[in-house]
Each structure stands twice: as structure tokens, then as C-alpha cells.
Figure 1 (spheres, rainbow, N blue to C red):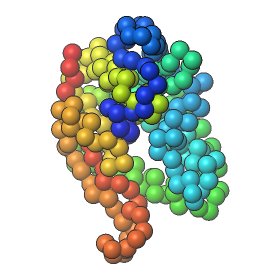
Figure 2: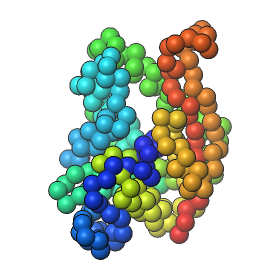
Figure 3: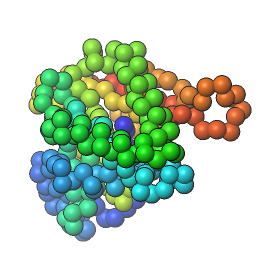
Figure 4: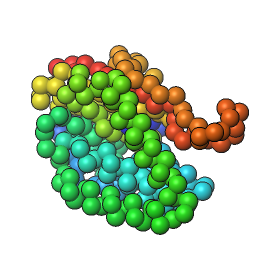
Length: 250
């Protein structure tokens, strides 16, 4: 899933310009961003950021269930991830994340452990009569993503995938998204990945990827519930969905 408005996010005085681990910026704010791999202990914070960025029907399901579904989402993207990178401010606030998959490489966290937690979460979510419908819609969306990968020949023409990209809305306009993007490119280049792809949808800032020069290789328009007329007021099952493909800049 793509970042939400990754190029324009709220101002807290933080700045870009970091080196491989961390670097103090040169302006008067003297803020520091530290980049490091993410582990199990970071998943709660990542879930909070995901849930804040893409809340899961809070009005209908409530904030607690929204967080459970958001954690399921995070684990879904994390399961195949070979490198999960986090950007943190000096006070420990999560400024942004990228989950990256390199074909043929081992996942960063144990797939069995991640899968077991996903099963446990799914049982809790599906025990709720409203949330079980939401879970069915999520799985329908995941199925469409696989169809789009086949349609766009995503895995045949690339060796990498950007699984998840989020920037904290409290660091708008200070280059955290750009730094995470460059580090993603550097990681792919280090593994000799010539091209990568990503999934995104109309709930995200799709123009960010157009601006970066990526090509849209597959697209599916928003789907409404079966039998619902176009003028029906019901929300579609999912947003417009896209796959973008990009070259790795060494």
C-alpha cells in the first residue's frame, strides 16, 4: 500500500538530509531523524500510524476493532517483507516506514510467527458480526491485487516490491518521505534489483508515483456490491486500485 500524501505532510520542524544511520540537520531546528530496521517491538507503533492514516470504518466498527484490523493489515504486508525500515525522531516518534521485498530473500521476521498472529487476529475480528463483513471485503481486495499482478506481469518484470510506505502526518514537508524513498532505492540497488512494483489505490496520493516517473501497469476501477446500480449510495467494496512499476536508480 502506498503512502498517504507522502510528499506533503504537517510541519514539526524536522528536516531531510540524513546519512545512512542518522545526521543532525544544518538549520536552526537541529532535528535528527534516525533510520533503523523494525522489529516485533515496533509493530504497535506501526499499527497506530497505519490506523491513523487509514482508519478502518471507525464509525461502524469502533476504534478498538479498527486497530485490530489495522494490525492485520500491517502483518499482511510485513509477512513477505525482507527489509522493514523505520524513521524515528529524537523523542522516539515514528516518522515513517517502508516495507520492502526482494525476490528470493528471506523475510525479516519469521513468516510462521507472523502468520500465527494473523490467524489469531482474524478469529477475533470474525467473531464480530460487523467486522466479519469488513474482513471479507479486505480479502476480496487482496484477491484483486493478485489478479492485477498477473495482469501487469508485475513479478515477471521486476525483482522487488514496495509492500508498504507511510509517512507520519506530523512531519509534513520536511523530506522524510523522500529520504525513505531514496533508502528504498539504495536497498534495491544493493541487491541488484533492476525494477520494483507497488500497489496503491485512490485513497492514497497516487500522483506521488506519477511524479517519481513510475509507470501504471495495471488498474481496476472501484467495485460496487454485486447488483447495486451505479447511482446506489453504498460505498464500493474497494477504491480504484493500481500497480505502478519503477526502475531502480543506483
